Image (cartoon, rainbow, N blue to C red; front, side, top):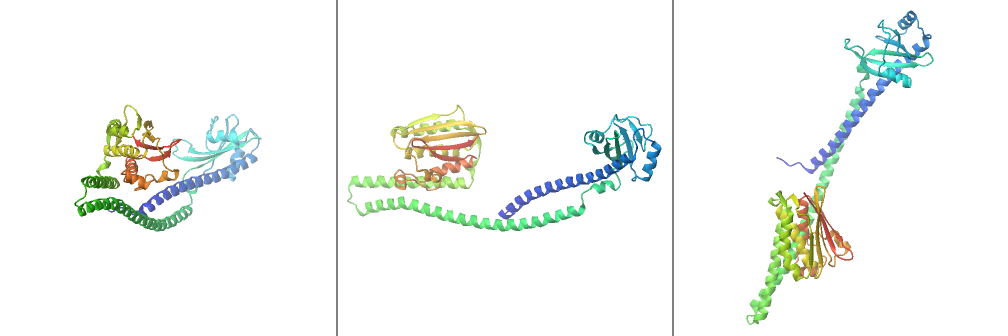
Length: 423
């Protein structure tokens, strides 16, 4: 199946939001226009009610005169009912014998505000809906309610204007075309920028790898060449050169292993398979593995962790995170430093704080610590066997697990890494 391009993704994302907005806007406008047209019809009937209220006398009303007035001043299918303030029906143009009327929503509204309307069924048996409009005639203590059948041409009259809907649809279609053109151009531009950045990063990474490999390879070559060209070299010097060559070979091995780890992480390969594990035994294992190194550097380690740290993650990635942090601290925190590892649960994540009281790093270097091959002190880092990839591996592994990491200063001196791992 063909993978969608960035332009298509951008277009579908924007057009989806646009269609959602357009749908909501059209729905709002349709409802608004329907309400507006109902209010126009209500005003029409209100005017009729007011005119009728001015024409009729004071109670008691003469039914004969009212019918004569309605015959000469009526609308087709109009039904008029007049009630007094107590709810008693004084006049009904259609039904006879109706004395009491408990009043509907429109009557109650008219009592409160002077007018009201509703759409409802007049009689269940009639099977027709009616549009009711009631008007209060305060000086005569009457409420005049007129109604028209909500059928035939009336519902059509209340429907939104089709010309408006077609106009709105045309405008939205034109905007959709513009969005498509914009998304295509933006997608192409973004893809070109990403390709340029990718080529730049790849070139920079290749240069960094070449530079990192060149130094130990040149050192090994120089030591071996010197030993080959001097068969009479004293055994002590030969042993020293051999040890130096071995140390450089170990540095090359560490560099290749780190690059291999990053390559697997970048490829999202099998290393990202998740499972339910307890991180605590894994940390305890690393503490045991590095105990001798901490003792040798006269460093103290304080571990404050819960009894269990259950999480859905990858065991190899979790081990890589903590092992690299421990190794990095052993290399750079310095002799006699204190190291702390704390953990607390925060919602759906575990929050870890790994700190030391070493010399720390300049504040401007904090955002760069997780960049590949970045070193605060390049000479000292190479002297200690660092590859410049340890913290980059930590950051990549944490992000693959769905967490995040940041570095900060510790007062009065030192460095702290704060990171999260989803439970």
